[in-house]
Length: 266
Length: 266
Figure 1 (cartoon, chains in turn orange, purple):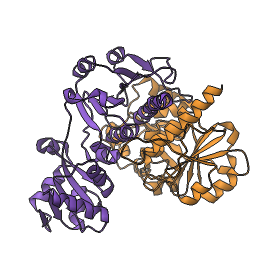
Figure 2: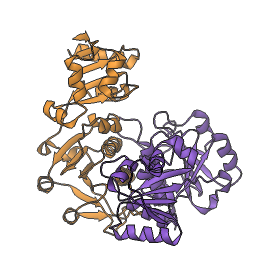
Figure 3: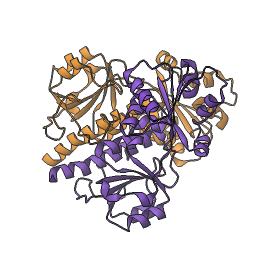
């Protein structure tokens, strides 16, 4: 269904704009994604938004999106650049904004054998880090991101943006630590923690798929008890004065090592 | 010199707060760094601020900083948590804020042989990426970060924070591309570009120190002419739907490969 909205006070505009806040996302089960590149990634992963806002679809990719929405019977709303600005909270809004149903995967539905790498992050605080980790997960062929304990909302606008669309290709799971470890031990899976409390070099160990890469909170790292539950703790060498890497960087360096070992065996 | 400021309208408070904006940083040649962890990293790299603001130094590291400032004859200003909030623009300000002299290194003063890796970034837009790249540079023992063309300000509060103090241990250079390439070709140095326009796997090549790792703008990547000037273009394998990694992640994956090759030769 295609329609037009021209008024700032339109209740749908207000409702969509409210999805920038976590409480409204939770209440509605919906989230925002902005920009042709991300919405096109989503479409390629067979994910169409429930509603698509655009301010005149000039770009062929925008046209493709609208065609796909119309074929699927989705809600396409043409509006002004000013109203798109209001929705996105930016002066130079993206050409398209999509409203998607959120999509956490329950832990028990995760098919661990479907991928060689799973990324597990505990108490992640920064939405940019979360999105960047999703993007890396997509690149290394990870199955998804398992968020442990209280992490930042993966459906926040900042996380979606940083994921560059990987939010739509990676499974996202949220679990308490106890649930996760119970589930993990019911099947195959090597739990590898990245830690400063070991001397084991991350390149000196052999990873056995499926590998569950566990990284901790930006400021605190992993709790001791979580490290103790790992099959292995490894350390990325650091030559400088600082004692840690950015968590998204550490995740990527680890994930590429797992991938590279597998490439050498292939 | 130790003194106390209790008034919000104190001109020094206003002046320091103005350093959150680039034009005032440029005009003053000063920038802000916040938090004990980052200021302590700076002190360990023998960098003391010109002015240190604190709201009662409870922590031993804060005490150490103040002692060092007093020994060096620096300006230590005790103030209220509210005024620190005003300076830092945050509700929960860090316990200490330092005002530092900015410190770009002129290209001609770079001793390229002093490190095995140099990171070169072109038209970087995101301060978090810039700071994260500095932090990675510190970890891999890079000599510094060479910023090409119009990059985001490395002395912005966000970049300083993301660098976690590496801003004080890495040399920072700003240069136009032509200047850089002229300088580079006057001595040893392998210029390696990370690009999608090659099939050469980043693990299949041999890096020869000093390696200059060149990464491009977040959205556009490297200009064609810059790629053409590289000694080598390499690609990080990507198995997923997305066609690129976050630039700070790509830099880290590359830099660790260079480091790992050297570790294997050692």
